Length: 365
Image (cartoon, rainbow, N blue to C red):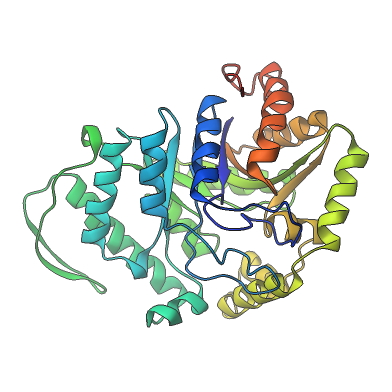
């Protein structure tokens, strides 16, 4: 099992609550967190690409670090962990993106990853004056965007590119990524067209889950379809964590979070998702229009699986996800710095005992 962190570059992280201890995404906190994650042996840290908040009482994600420069700073401050940037295809030209990301990859000596997002948020796109493409067209643009970047990174002689979305002449770019190896690419496409894009192009498919066992066939299908075209694709999922000494403590804390939920922000986000999915007929699209997530999942990590309980329970839940085929999990906490040390001290050794981690992570001190 591979483990990472998700969303720490944004205020509130992935928690929609107004509690005073919610995540304060300062630069110092992000550097401390990245160094801690590096020290305990986590594999990666993944940001959210966010340009404006979701409103509500706390304006969830209203303050956020741009993810390419965020990754650059964290890679300079760490030694082993992989730091991802999350990039919206329609908002960044591929030649500019290729140069920026190659630069960051040299700073990290090959530890940059790229989370490619083909776009969905009308709120943000309107702020840029960019019109959102129809759903399937977004992935066609993503294919062109990623193809151009890969050709630049491959060190091709100057080339022309003529596509539906990009018409480019005499394209070139140096340096290539560190070691002449392109960064790994992650994508979270959930629709049939989105999954196809991820299967054909990504190294890591970031997929949602409601019940671990219900995900087994979907994971198997993703991996088999990738193998059929000569590719290996890992499947990852996000998980919200509340880990406490007793189940009662954990249950009390999630009840406290729900009592202080930021329903304004949650309602705004739910409406954005519903509007974006209005023409989708696939299961995930229908689910987004309904917006029927359990309350605790909405507040702790909207749209994601949650593990709430004792260290033994958390380890068992993560083992369930591993057993059905997930290769990696990215975790969020209400306050990453306050809660990650206890998770590292209590849960990681339990995962190592189950032989789900190859080596015991380092000290958190």
